[in-house]
Amino acid sequence: MTPPLRVYRVPHSTNVERVALAAALKGVTVEWVDVDPADRSELVRVSGQPLAPVLIAGTGATAEVVCDSPQILCWLEQHYPQPPLLPADPAARAEVEIFCDWFNRVWKLPPNAIAAELGKDAPDLTAIAGWSAGMRRTLDLFEALLTGRDFLFGALSLADITAFPFLKYPVLGLSAGDDERFHRILVEHMPLGDGYPGLRAWVARLDALPRA
Image (cartoon, rainbow, N blue to C red):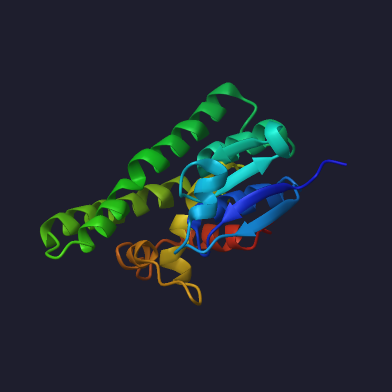
């Protein structure tokens, strides 16, 4: 019997939720190791860096250590290919992979920039307004992708798993005990008003999925 994977996590982490969703969809047993976000020495000990999640596969000197949620998602897809979260068709697979790369490297820049700016003694409100406007504009892209679809690229894929933990905040708000500045930014800078029915339904659809 394959031993469960160990995954180190911190509370309310969007990146940890990605892994929890993917593992549950693939029926993978996860042994969670909770880390105090104020003391990340254990993360540094096991992985050499302070960020969660960190996946440990195996034990002892041969254990495989995988950091960063996009890398962990790829690892899970490679080692547990069923059910697939990447399309078999090469073109469709490339579309999903390009979206995930864009989301991680481009879409996440404005909220991270706002969080960093708000941490300064004298935040640049003009810069924050520009980043905020860019975040709002992307909502129209997501709504368009969901036109006539249940998921971003038709079938449930890594695109949905990658984006949902971030895009849920304007719909669901902050969960109990979640006081992360980054999450408040996701709520406050992407107001949905009375619109975006596709995005709202997609969030509800993803939120109903199990977590490992």
